[in-house]
Image 1 (cartoon, helix red, strand yellow):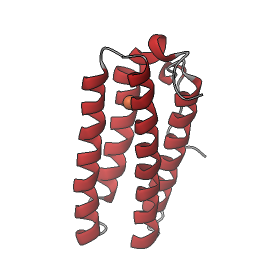
Image 2 (tube, helix red, strand yellow; image 1 turned 135 degrees about the horizontal axis):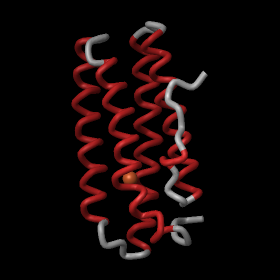
Image 3 (spheres, protein in one colour; image 1 turned 45 degrees about the horizontal axis):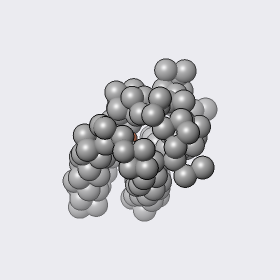
Length: 135
Ligand SMILES: [Fe+2]
């Protein structure tokens, strides 16, 4: 059962990115379950890496789509993506050297960051990107 409940308000109206966001939520759910089940360092680190790899791919696509329509708020948006990536690296280092320290915090950070980012930043691009993106 999914841990994070998807709400209608998370939809941006850009189908490609709504699908990506669903996938990221699923990966964060898997990460949560691995941590909850004390699955061991290798499994938990892999679950974290899976979230970050897919998120990185998704950020690149969002950024390309914003660039394609010369989206006015692109710089701030990209800065938010960079902040998440920097913070994730910091957590990965903590987890790598002090496992399992940092795992629960990393899960909560990713969940909260993502849901806030979707609602505060991603929803704003909805009206501009509905026909954009590399569909
Ligand atoms: Fe974004």
